[in-house]
Length: 366
Image (cartoon, rainbow, N blue to C red; front, side, top):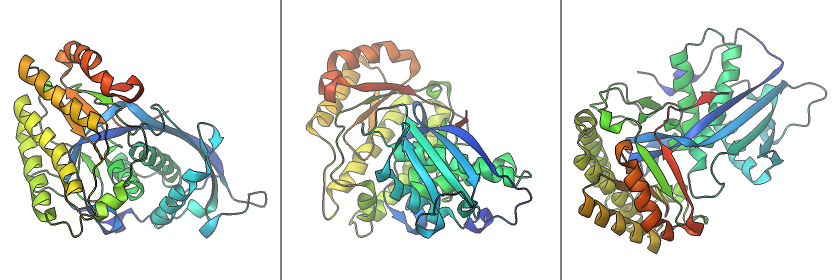
């Protein structure tokens, strides 16, 4: 079993002066949620997600070896410029700085280069879709591309495992954005190869029902959350229901193994919606307690339940740590579900905005 120490490299066998890479990495939506973490971004419970396709971050990394003409290094000797959509973005820099500090032991070349990080999202910035997952995954892929030049013997398996490991140190769920389709993060006894250190592709049978699954994201509230995910995770430490919740996540992940094999959409809906509501129940029962759902979130949930009950169409919802609603459904009912969304749900979206997405294949070199 790999440990964190296995990602600390020996001496590099090659050198390079300058160059650039470009990667895209998608966001993802958890079906079994992780909420609560231990030291070093280790999850308190395992999770499983659908990798998305259209909602992604595209990041270009230019690098040049430091020399006499290099700009002065920033704090702790790291030297980088950060551009968002081609323009300097100073308020993103502290998060990148913290990420570099966390991963330096695993990427010891970082202080040898000046980096220009140029990043953009395919979805509206601050739209309430977690861009930290896609952003940190895209950055990790770029850094691993540079390390592969310094260590050409690196295997593809190691490359992707370490990229996911590094992404996790920037944003926990980012480790699920490196690979595609269905990704598991966290130790789960019944899932071979699962680990707390990085995300792994779900290793068992996935029924045709779940191929090309659709996710339409209803943008209920695009404002900044009043409680950050980091604070929310921390509140699980003394939470009265934490231990039972962690056990429930393991149980639900076990259920999904059988559901993915059988294609049972009714059971899939029960697990996914229960997980979404449990996540928000944990927020409402922490101390201090908080609510991230908005009135329109509840209007949408009730409308989905009514529509499903009347039509027997297997559409369901899930939620991240926010007010927006992910509407999940098989591809073969897409026309009817999109009509329903346009006729009945768009009215509950901020500025009538929603994004059509589907299962995707993970990070891609551009």
